[in-house]
Image 1 (cartoon, rainbow, N blue to C red):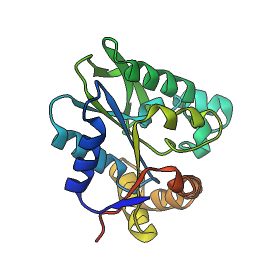
Image 2: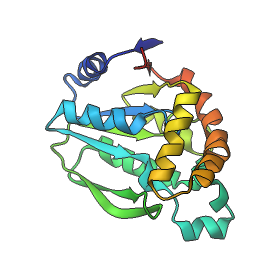
Image 3: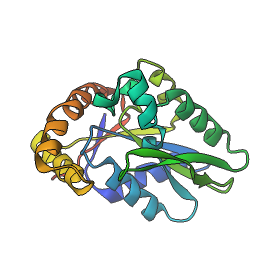
Image 4: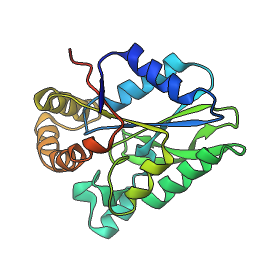
Length: 208
């Protein structure tokens, strides 16, 4: 498995895979706080026109549904997402026939936002970002085969944890609540996600 250590190297890898394709789906996976969103956003910006971001976050189940299912206290676990909806959207995007819409996610209220994202037929590269792109259970095993190339973002545990706590505080949690959630549900999910690392085509480690 190749290790990518710079953004230019990441760009070159994606462009090589996309060369000659009408549409390419690029998967960016990793644990909470690893930097997936930052890397995915930067990749889309660098790729320019014809590139778009598809975050997995929009497929969180609504808060009301999580409460009904008794899963609100572990929001972010694999079974707290609409995996069927995510797979259907990826398949529609992959088919590249006309415009496709997908939900976004409002972190301030932790709710999905229907049809917030639009992918026109002219979109050539779709960067898909999320925790469970390489997970192989509970329906998630259908995701990776729809992606043309996959990257796992690696980051030292202590740095990742600090970033994660800071993010939770930024979106409204107290320092104490942010640390408790980061060391609780987030850490449980992170251990599961780290176990999917070997399924990626490439590892992204930008720390050196």
